[in-house]
Image (cartoon, rainbow, N blue to C red; front, top):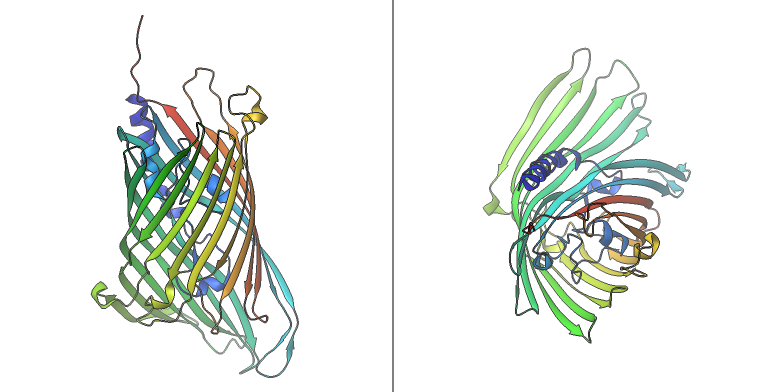
Length: 434
């Protein structure tokens, strides 16, 4: 119990602090649109397997992508998981003509970002019932770009944005008849997104000015999951999973400011809008996902997912059809040579995955298509006292290629490294003294 209180206190502190860091972890000009770049509800091992979650059910990893998986929690263990990432992005734009007919040469830019990404814990409640709590990002906004106009001596127009949304969740799952597990995540969604546009004149006699918009969003999000477990033979099993997330109508506060930068800076609030959620000025659409995994003994895990979100019907600034339908297909595999071996590398988990998706973002009446490949390793952690069972260090490498459906727009390439640690502790058991 003493260990439980210590780690629980540490977990609460980390969960409280992650919300500070789970912002502006993206450097993409396309995050100017919508709520920014959306995150998947997948932790380290799933990221290395293309992001598959719906059919994943394992005792050694937390899987918030399908809350029905929590019921597999071993009655004697406590899981604690946290992850960080580092991402390098390359942005390429081909040659094009500006409104004056002048040719703008092709350009390429490189950016690096990284952050503490998520933290979560999972524990048993009773037989066949498990729970999980944690915090993870929902979306991220981060961009800065501009152009120069040859008017009134020259002016630089700069556009930048920052912020994002996070979600704190608590989930519960129960398994019926050893075959069906049902679970749900209840999340509090919150965050701030700031967009700013400014005009900076080369002539010092002309004052610079910029307008900033700050969107504060709060709401509740629910994910309902189910998994069906079908044993095949003595060692294999097939798991079919599905997740449904109802529509979210968050409470939103929008503030707009205009700032004049001169000999003495002055800022004046243009407007403050408190938006009643009943008016549905902003919304997050319902989503649906289905997937399956096939476990072959203790060696192979094969999985596939499909998800769908109709963002075209979602309201954004009280308007629909400003975003696109989002669909994603993910495939993944994991191989463990010999889980009972004393050899470190035979107990290591080797993972590979791929995904294909259409982005929900819409710009110039078009969208983005994303391709991704991933590799990963899961290294076991051993304890000389035998009190650590299944703890792992996971590392994944992802290559993501994002291409607009119109060739003149910016093309993005990302190389992402994710590191997470899962602590699997034997706490909930009674010791016997001889």
